Length: 146
View 1: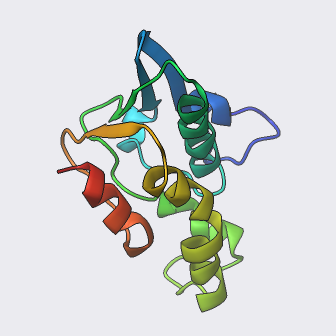
View 2: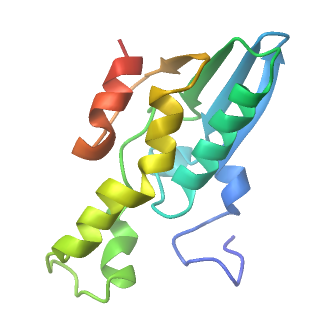
């Protein structure tokens, strides 16, 4: 059930959408927890939590590897675009302005991309089902899905 202060498309608090747990002495797991939405990333919410979880694993000297997984049938179905028209004051079917698209592609995902590219730990992506990625983060994720 949505919390009153959250976006209507955010069904639970951000910290519950990306979970970090240590599953063994040297292994941590980061899990996307929106299985009802194909573990789609909620822009402005989940990529921040994902970066925090990856940083947490990187900053733990005992952790040697981080497993990244989805909690449902899919690893990640990509960006949850249902809320973008609302946040950008556009009507359904209307194209988003380039500045909005570029801000997401270049600024908002930068911290998360850095945590994938420059993380000192081995990151293993468990890519079950669909693994949708956009151009901004596709190369980063494909690197870890092989």
